[in-house]
Image (cartoon, rainbow over all chains, first blue to last red; front, top):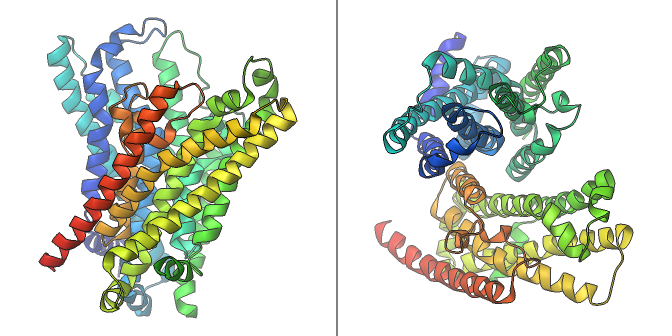
Length: 257
Length: 240
């Protein structure tokens, strides 16, 4: 069975999981205050950022700091738990498919969920930008090319974090610990991005990328900028390491019992 | 009786170590913060509890709420995962008493977590500040208040996890609610009564009348969700 059809099959399994409602609810709730407080965007002269850029970046910062990582933790729970009910995973492991491939297919589904949430977020951004443009009589709509670049960066930065969460959910069979460690690891990311070793902490990547974009857009604000040299190699190593560990450990607990 | 039953069920799920670990993690927040930048806080005038809590409570409360949400998801996950709930229903035990048992257990665990955190605050005050007169009564008042305001969050997250058969849905709703709570403005009284937002309140710096109003509101919410649970079970049973 080739990899693509495996991924397709994994997507079929989560069809009736209602996860998309949760992802959508999160993005809707995220943009509500931005619509209600749209006038705040005109009071950012001190930072030297234009209202439309501020509107965009504040929303995405809110997402990148907690909502997006936490949704990914929920996604790992979904993927690991759907198969544990009624021992579905045992049937999958009995098939003549390499377990590493199966593990990577599930990881691809998780990336799919991440991309879906980012797209929903962008869709909601455009809807709320249109609404605010109407209410504030000022165009908040940014060119799609710019928005596309930002969300692509966000997605790329999230991959090591998602790989880490995936490793947690594969390696820790007790759900309370994998969720607990995942959620607890998100909280200090606000502190980590202000330190010099932020690149060693994958959970802070999405938030760091968005904050550094904020610094670029705001003329009077000096946020730390992305330094590609320690970051990219470290991120690649973390991702490969996490995926390798999860591929090796995948299904081991089930095979033993 | 049902509380002891729930305690036994918890044995190998990692519930107890998760709460203790979470409590220690949240308690580490003020200690690390003080160890790294103590000079920033030591120069401030005022009550050490107030200084420490206003510097760290947001993050500690966030960890507490996430812990309660995770714990609540687990409590009903073990019932639904292998259809244990059906066996529970066939026993001469009322369905609502299972809920009560779980609520009492979680309340007890959150008490433990808050006690660990209070210990950390006392340690920080002793090490970096001076313990003055009435320090311990102030500490008890602050954490007692935090405990009371935690109750609506506990009961609602258990209610959510009872309502949803699948763990990811209850966890997803919980996470979305926690996120909403972090976005709500804390100075608006009506909005900060959202059950997941009340644990972010702290006694230090709030005036007494307002604090009493929060306590009443938390009590009302707690009983309202308890009633809602009784109704919910009745309604759900009629559709099963």
